[in-house]
Length: 205
Image (cartoon, rainbow, N blue to C red; front, side, top):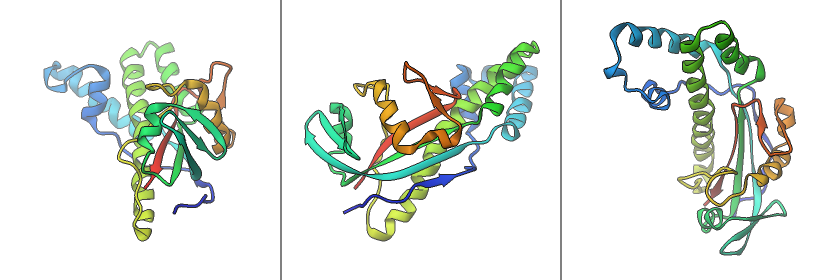
């Protein structure tokens, strides 16, 4: 059975988003773009690789199954049939948080203010894929560690604000991870800042 573990802190997570996924987020297929525009996007993607970094925290927390629509994570009752279903075979919850620092995110608005619309759009799409992909890196690393005890994380993860998991629960997981130490804040609408910040939950099976 998984026990609560010490907080894992990652000052930097190496990850390079796949160009195809970035292009999908842009709503474009690279093959259908004019050659000059395609070359410009390639150049901007190379710039983006050195423009952004991601920091993260994660930890295993105690999990209690209450009923088909409620679980308790570290003593906090969470209502979500979809999350309960995801965690139904899990002995603990693995909570993750990742964030691109504000000074990096500001490069997107700086490009827009400078009249570099294409750069802003490409950087925004890249940053979104980067912070999401950072969670994949966390999961891969944790699975490697769990393999020694014949455990693994659930194939899927879940974030507040998706499905039937109310975004208000973002505050619960924000506090569990103490994401303030990553210079992340949360407002009265439970939105994270910097904008390119994400929280997700997976199960330990």
